[in-house]
Image (cartoon, rainbow, N blue to C red; front, side, top):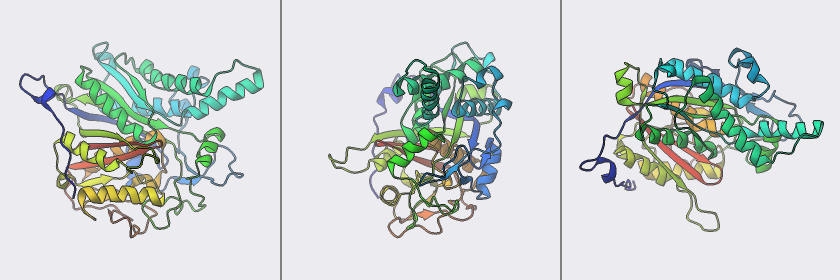
Length: 422
């Protein structure tokens, strides 16, 4: 086992330092391919219900990959004001619905908060594809003014977060992070920083979707998608038969609050975000390999914990042989071979881009609440070169769960790790 890095805490914890707010989660909203709504999704996860199936959003018959995780039972008109329907796309509509669920779950009325006390910090990465495609279609069909892809994406990210802010009157510090699959954890970390700077509540996490022709071409061009046609065997994290990932849509938004403020209003608390760290992989030419393990160790140091105090790891689970080997090696070096239970409930949803790691964070919090580890489905046993205690088939009960580690990797070398505690 490798030594856990240490952090210098003198600036915040030394003599004369001000109180360091503890960030707690008081509300959760979810949209996922195997359940719309947090409890419906969690029940489906514990049943091992697969949300991956043939792509229906458009005709994908001519593409080499045709499976996706689509959110079921979502009727935008039930959640989005009619005047916004023409101005929004799938990502923004899902985000508005999920944000409302999270606030309702937290039992908080933003109107009762001080005017600039609450904000929104989200992540996004692939959702701008649908918006960008619509801009191009307008250009082609109507001769509209040209807008570059970068302008489209930047405007989309601002609109997505801004719509949540406007709908709920959240005028505090806000922002958007774009680090692909790692974005959900990075956004929560930024929200935690805002609490330390004086905010009392932040809606945070990520919701994403690129299930449109332009987004699908981008996935295909990368060459990492699974070509499998059996929804139950296409996405197999840590399996010797792994052949790539399946894209999905959705994610989770969390209500993050200062613990004292939450206690003051009698809020129900799911758990605390006790630690976080991010690292960046060097370029292949520079060498040095993955720094995911370093992110995990630094997150534990930030939480003031040892590896043997972690009860479960929610893996990034790329579903690609080399990436899975790399992650398994990082986990084994930190905890020892098969030294900690590991799970990947995203095997039931596919990889959700910026929504994936925040959904894993929600799963970790529900696991701590219910004292159960959800299963990894599809994978029948981990490959020999992935020496993990992988929870497969059915949920694992009878274990005491106090601390969970969530890992995430984003395209381009982003790594993030977060520690949540009951």
